[in-house]
Picture 1: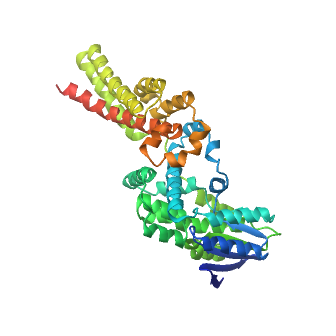
Picture 2: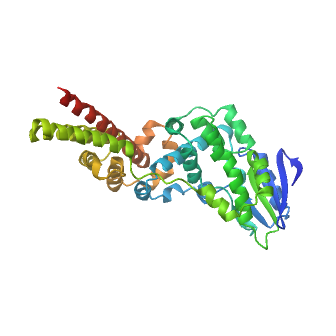
Length: 400
């Protein structure tokens, strides 16, 4: 492994392994000089393949302005990817603020590298891990408090309008978009650093080894400068089979389909109603059951109403919420959101204005895409609050 003199403040490392010469070009994701360095390197004709710190989803977002407009919102809801979609919105809003503040699109050098590789007929290798996997692995390393902090930070990031701080811009100059984004949303933590930086160093090294072929003997890898040292080290020293290592770095512990916390509350409520029947007869039991339905259904409907849901979505919330014991793994908000999106399907213009609208509360209500997210979130909040209050009310009645 060797270092080459930095060019226009772009540090480089060269690693030779298994007959392939890898030139790792460290860039700043908010630098015109980085774009020029990429252009000069590819124009030199010294490389027969180009690798970039992108996954297919991020490449599409950079190169296709209409990528969001092709999104199937119904599938997002059905597949339980609403939280991930909201996180991507937060990241997009953050990047837009940066572009407006510093006058250059974050990741412009990666986009340019992909464009030039296509123009020159060079193989393009997408070596970064899917941002959804990174987000889920980062979240999985946090406790409940950390997850709440991360979620709250993401929500705050959606509505933030102030300029990005100098510290975060410096991180981008050092070269990692996700690190700068997550540090603004969630603060520093060793767990986030491990998933967002250290793991991705190893992942990208693994992907470079996987992409090895007989025709690509000189590869230019364009990555954020913050990844340079770790990437070079792993590329030089890792001995585990690439496929096995990648599988381990992509593994996300499956979420339990059984929400034990909600199940415990429901069990307590059911026991309370049963005790009421035992003590006062069927009339008391029906009265307590009515209290449960009123609180869960009523507050779920209130959440939908506050979110500006379609009237049928509000009715759906009220009807579905009391049946939580029969669909423990499916949130009430999913039903309400699906009904809302069926009757008020987002238009093409809603997707095009999504990044702008996501930065203000009024925009969230005006845009049909973000309003569906509000319906999902506020309906679930109402349903969960109703469950707690129903339990308290039932036991309050039994105590008298």
